[in-house]
Image (cartoon, rainbow, N blue to C red):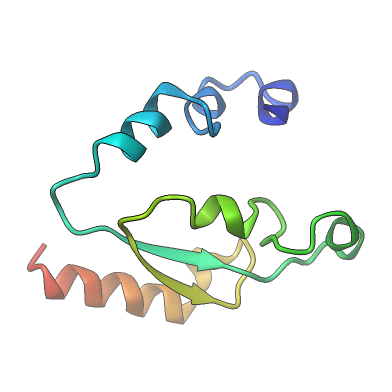
Length: 100
């Protein structure tokens, strides 16, 4: 909800917990394999006092809200996950496993 106040970008209206898109994902899981990388490190010490279970942007609870993905946790922040060798390896393994 607070995302809508921070940015007018329409993408934020699609990723809120009560959005139509998220509701559809909860009731109609995809028929293809889904892996999800959960990031756990925050670089914002003051934010950690308010919401300790976060990657600095998204709560771990939100990152793991869906029942069907295979979750893998890595110790990276939200904004640097794609620079992580571990994340790149996980994505490559997923693509190779399903021959994508």
